[in-house]
Image (cartoon, rainbow, N blue to C red; front, side, top):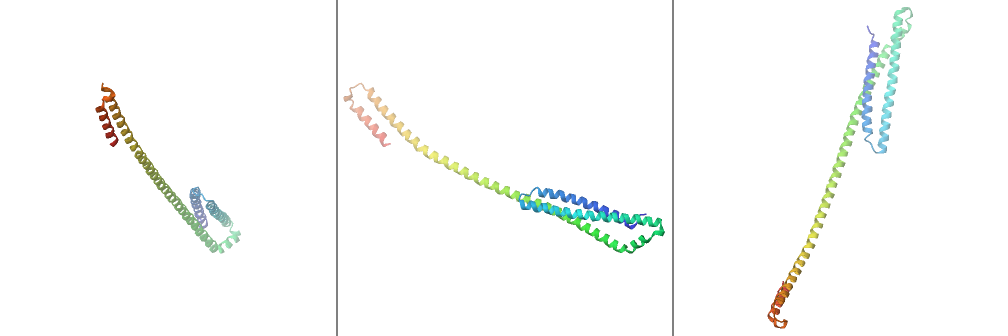
Amino acid sequence: MKSHDQVSVEAIKRKNDEIDKTFNMFAIAHVNVHSQLVERNKIEQSEQYYKDGYDEIELLYKRVNLWIEDMEERTRLQVEDEVNPEDSLRLVEETANGKALKAKLELLGKKQALAERRLELQKTRDEENICLLQAEERLTVKSELAECYAREKVFAEAEAAERGASLNIKEPLSRAKSTSMKHEQSMLGASNNLKSDNRPYEDNSEVLYETKRQLINVTVK
């Protein structure tokens, strides 16, 4: 049958393993958060924070391992004293200090539980920091997209205005060209009328009159 000290040692070892797992989870979460940092001062703060946590856990491990080794040694000596009752002075001394050892064990267990809880809270805070970073990134992307849409709209309006101005310039030119072509056609028609008449030039008074009338009409138009 296991003694109370043996059971306590096994319980502390299990707690030690749980703290080790929790610290590994904290280390992974910290790496994820640390990789998101950009500013130099925040990176340095993150590195120092991890170092402080690591140093504290390492010190706790050393203390726990020393305590476990001490308890195992005490258990071994206790067994030897039971085998050799005549040499029981050490056992008497340890019994006298039993209350102090029990109080020390309870304090150590409480410290381990608090350290584990602290790591859990740190993991939660790191996850919240990741969420905040992601929200900030989403806001930045949304703002940049809005700016792109606004600039695109300005470019489209400028191009539309430029196309409108080009059409307004081309339309008067086309009208002037049409009027010039009509004038040339009228002149050509008048010349043909003169050529079609077989009478001498000075006898074509009617043709000249008609030509002048057409020219006046074209000019008025």
